[in-house]
Image (cartoon, rainbow, N blue to C red; front, side, top):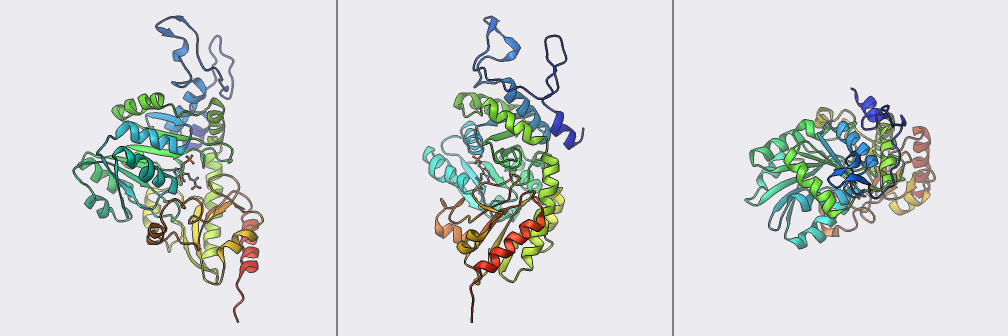
Length: 389
Ligand code: P1T
């Protein structure tokens, strides 16, 4: 079955058997508990809704299919998924190698919460595979990658890094939120685990917060599944329904996100008020060849540095269609200043070192008419241009 068909049908086949209603969409099962006729025979396999419920099961099966995984696990947020993963697979004294450019909230979770439990994190520039290999220590257990990264749209070579990880018996995790499973499937490239913030492209409409873990290894799954229930950071049935609904149009939406983002990246890259554009679809992107190899499209996210002739704060205030807001991956275009918003929890020194400066703006390109988006950006540039004599 091809992606678009799987995205509509997998996980919610209508129940046409005796007693079923043939619902074409999965019902929102609100029951917190499930009655049984005998003590050791849960009806339909469900006992208590934190442990599992039919709406969540439908979502978990669908997400697993979309990532070519054997198993799917849904969570209350992307960070809930990440926390559960870390607590399930790591213990006091373990070391994790992390791609240094990544969502600020993930870094905050690692440095300010999980580090208190004796986990050690090293941040490396994983655009160069050899940097990952040379960071491996005796206590390294896991490699954490985001690709493309948030907010600089850098890539790392999933296949090459996963190969190194396997040789050292390490687990490779890829946060695939920016690409979505439509554009990239890390498990096919050798990664062990995929993480998603389903709040973004999978939900797609900025109306639900959620997360997911996709995995094929039985042993890793057993630990993750146990901790999904033990920790309990699970999504509500209504939230599962919203993400399930979102996935049905993922392929259509991503095609438009790709198209619009490339158009805007091209427009911005020749703009006299723009210093640099980060978008893997541009031929000038230093990893364009890798992007073509490991992705089937370049996605809806881009970031750019405005030059000294524009005050970024004024520019953001002049936009009319594109909303100034955190988050990404919805049908509507959103813009943000990572240094003061999504990545504010990283120290200024570290932000400057990585390249997250005040003139960096991140654009989540929506699926509106791209001409309207271009006009919106242009009028904001003109109104925020500093007049120099
Ligand atoms: O917000 P939440 O569903 O908990 O997901 C966290 C998360 C994980 N991974 C990536 C790559 C992310 O971008 C995020 C959340 N990011 C934003 C809210 C943002 O505006 O970048």
